[in-house]
Length: 156
Image 1 (cartoon, one colour):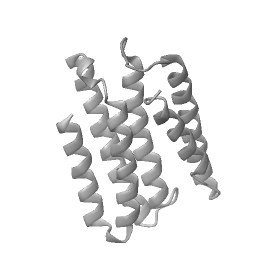
Image 2 (spheres, helix red, strand yellow):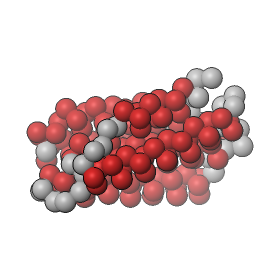
Image 3 (tube, one colour):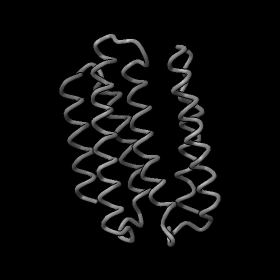
């Protein structure tokens, strides 16, 4: 877990340093990511070493993608804006953590099927948000609501 936190913090610091004008959006996006990962990783000690290594490799790819896409957006490239990229990629990284948690036989969730259903809804909403970013009519409100519903399942 400490390694995951370090990787997330390192990415946050690097992006904040390079794009000072995005510092508030970066801080907020990564604050949400850290909170979501804390909940999603609640039972990470039960994950087999090989699965954990695969997950961490996927995390690294997700964080690297975020960095590349932020650079593209900040350079004025076509596609989502830098704040939209932050939402897309930090949400995708969090949802990967939830996929790992819900795959555990003993996830610690009282209603695993309900949480899996909320995860699927959040993933669908993320894809909808991505599509809306392309058209320029994106609002993260529905996505944020779906992710909060997912997180609430960790407390039930």
